[in-house]
Length: 359
Length: 272
Image (cartoon, rainbow over all chains, first blue to last red; front, side, top):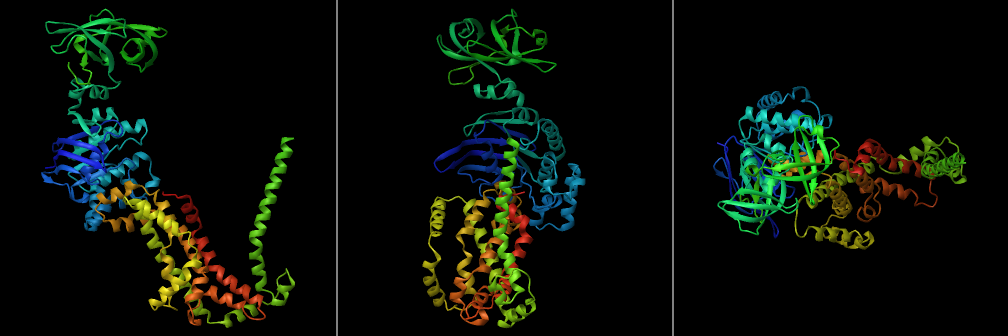
């Protein structure tokens, strides 16, 4: 059993509260990813689970036992750091066996476990090298190996891929997914890269300012964000937000007017809302339709078009609002200065002035 | 035009460097040359090697119990260096790694103490040693120096480059604070230790005033003290003094060349 339970967990540095009451259940063998912008408290929360930061208030259980005051080495966790934190004066083999040496594990047992971890990560040929003789990706694997050797119940990863180049990052991401399958342990993973979060997680926890904005399965967060922040954070490119005003209300429908887009009007089903209320319309780049396809047509000036081959992203603007539109055929639109797209009311999100989702 | 200017610039640079090299190397040259000449030749300013080397060495060795003096010097400088590095690095590490409300105030207060000249501390220190009844012992020479504020400051600055994630990793690996210090911090910071070793060993080895005050019998004297006594007579023998000066310089030179590479790394604050 290696579930992790957080109950109203708080952390203050002096008078500044950085974690403001977090409740979270991480199931056994679950891959949970904390995402959020810098300074949202995700790394602090991870360090609190690790025992590297004290918990000011609340309760932390790992494997059903309260761990608030337990020494980091006795929590059944292992951590992989952003900078890898390999001991520079030790070989790969010594780095990986270091924790066991201090746990007074017999030498041949240490050797066996180190070799086993080295096999899983294909580190065998590097065992006698020093960290400075390794590439970034290899160091990363050693750091993971060091964690595996400890045979933890919970793995903690603190932005482990952020120091790698793009290609290696994709490769290591796949490695991590494979590793999770092979090791069958609980993983808590911190990143600010929502692509990593979407591809790796069983559950994504979106944080902001020390609280959890939403936690759920990646596609649930994508399809069904609780608020404007989550909607904007999950998904790449980011969701487009358009300022709108409710101008009519009738029989379970409201009609919106898009002030920045030539007063275009859009009717969509909504029971709440009052006439005159300012709201925000959310549309994902891939959800714009062809002009005339129904809904509201808006005309945009093209700033830049990025052609990725199978698809293109058109960065456009109108009325001071910058939007991204995904187009499959826009390679044929080179040279055009503006496009007309339609907003499908069925696929549009709506947020109130507080950023809470109302549709 | 610009080519000849560059040439003149280069020439001036080399001239300045040559001058600096001459100023730094000539005393050593003079010292080595002096060991081979008689006192009279040295006073006359003879700049060629003479034949008095063996004579000077024998005279030097017979002036005092050289084995005992070297033992004293090495013990005081060696033990003093080890203890200073241990205390100062522990303090520097502690000041940098552990957060406290009072940390900067205490540290600032300590730095302020650097401005108190040793001359002002001499008498109180002597009285302190006297009250401990350790005048004329090795402890009396070594103890006052081991909590060197300068070296603590040096270690604190160097510790800023010590990655805090290494400490976190070690804590997760189950190391206690003292184990982190000895098994992770010390080996990682070995360049810093090497640089500090050179500085502290040289200071201890060359230390003159304090040993002169607390070491009162001949069998406790260090090399620096006895070389100084060679100048004391009515007719100082400069040839013998030069031999003494070489004997006193050699150990620091050897240590410097042994640790030179690490010294440079340590001065650059490199953690690799």
